[in-house]
Amino acid sequence: MQKKTIIILILVFVSVGILFAGFLFLFPKSQPAQIVTNTTGVNFYPFKTTPKVTNLTQPIDISGTGVETPTPTVNENNSILKKISSFPVSGFGTYSKQIFAVVQPAVTPPVDTTVTVPVVKNSKKTAVVAPVAPATEYVSTVRYVNKATGNIYESDADKINEHKFTNTIIPKIYEAFFTKSPNAVTVRYLKDDNTTIESYLGTLPVDLLGADSAGQQTLNGNFLPEGITDMSVSSDGSQLFYLFNVNDNSIGIMTDGTGNKKSQIFTSPFTEWLSQWPSPKMVTLTTKPADGIPGYMYAINTDKKDLTKVIGGINGLTTLTSPSGKLILYSTSTNGNLATNIFNKDTGTTNTLGAKTLPEKCVWTKDSSYIYCAVPKSLDPVLYPDSWYQGLTSFSDEVWKIDSFSGSATKIADPVALSGEGVDGIKLALDDNEDYLFFINKQDNYLWELKVK
Image (tube, rainbow, N blue to C red; front, side):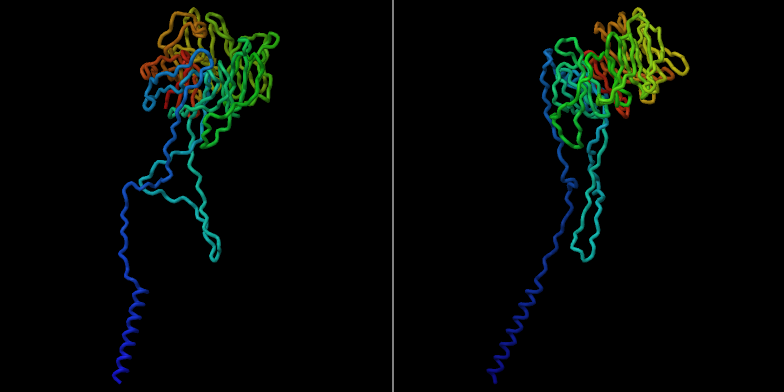
């Protein structure tokens, strides 16, 4: 009996031990929860990259005259006046370029803007997250042609980041005209005989959003007729007008930006003309000027193809018509006495401006309310515009903004004070938003910009 009792007790203790071991296996001792503290400087934008810096190289000089990179004369971070190009240019064009917007880091985590497609119950499909397109913005951009090589370069207006856009070499470009529809450029130069003027119209490569072309694109296009004496671009940048001589007659041709659709709108036995295309339906022609010689200006209606006299009998006449087509800025000179005026076609009245300059050194705003001009600080006692055209005299300019209705003028910049460098401004142009004024320094053909707003 005692032996049986001992066996029963042993079995009970064994059973209790097994149950206790099973309890520990099924319900292990819990671990303390980890406490995660917020770390200062958490990067909410892990894919933010450092801007790529490209080492620009000086283009090879093939002109035989040498291309010297200038020492910077302005503080590009602070000054409203900046030198854009690192070499002489033959022409430029302004654009609004689409780029990826720079996202500034937020103080708080950004709101999730993704869209989640709900999962159907009992379906094997998983949730799909729709991607959000990156933000973009438009910036003012300028493209320009290297005078020595014909390569096209590009830079933003708000920050100077000059880089090569095309690698097609056309030596010794005299002048260049850019069109916007399509994006194209016409470069003009002398053939090997140093007499015949050649004009090549090339379509610019497509500028892909976010792409880094590294200047490897080529310029493809066609030649326009030889011997074009003058050329101008329409106010909307979509068409060209050019003049050339046939059998002692001047012929005027209007064409689209590709050079394929051509229409003759003018012919004259007089061959000395300067053209401008200030408004969509108006091309103006002004006789080439000389001090003391009466000049005349005419307007061509591009639809009717008729010719109408606007002003005439004015000595040393040079002109610049407003985008409205109603106001004509013009200069007159007799024995070197230069004067600048505005003629109103509607009223037939003329107002003389206090600022003395040449219309070739000015540009109108889109609404024809104001004129930006490079105004010489002083005028030498020479014949105008003859001596200036021939390079016998040069100016040191200030930039003025002129009210076209009141004639009042305000000086907005002195390049010498801002940069220590004198500027003789030509080929003035505004960007699409009229925030920047671009011009070429006639003294050395470098491209500049001035922030005017």
